Image 1 (cartoon, rainbow, N blue to C red):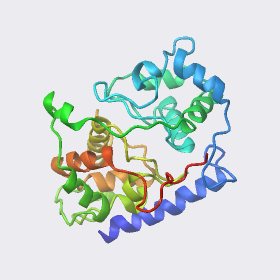
Image 2 (cartoon, helix red, strand yellow):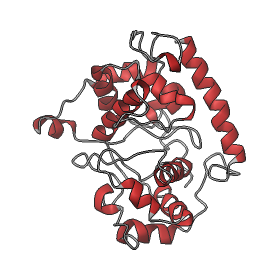
Image 3 (cartoon, rainbow, N blue to C red):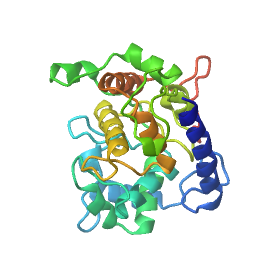
Length: 269
């Protein structure tokens, strides 16, 4: 546990430095407002551009994503995170192993287009309350226990995993609380850690498994490895399937409002 927490602390310093020094992350405000053309971003999102189809065709007209397609909610996500993911898809640092389209789509857009789309989506606020877990269960999807997931998100887990990759640190250890980086109810930390609360259940499950696969074999077909300093891989390597399903079940419906505070955190409007 100490090793993972040390890695998290070190990564926070590195990412924080990126916020201050990298144009893709920099902002004078704590909440980085997008610097792109939101109108052009909306046009691309709704209509596409050239060979790139409309983002809405997979991510929904409101940007809330789809459990059927395993696509994420994008609306309201932090600008810096959206830009990084689009740039990583364009440079193949991140591979789309779900629908196999995001790499080509990102490459089909200019750097400015990608910033424009990210600006539009980061400023788009929707009233999305999470995936319909009962409907997913009825359709045969394995759904975890939200109460167990809440414990993992808020407090972590003492679980030990003898299969933890040596290249990511010492063997075994516990799982740190998700909120230590992603904040209360997964609402995120602007410019550093993405919002994962009120995200699509299927997407959360898939990505946690991809991070875990990336820890086991960075070159594997299903691996995701575009996390700074291997942070997410170090955490996901210690998660069981039940842990992943339960954490996702809690996060998809997690209310980002702190008791007594009726404003969404980091809302820049």
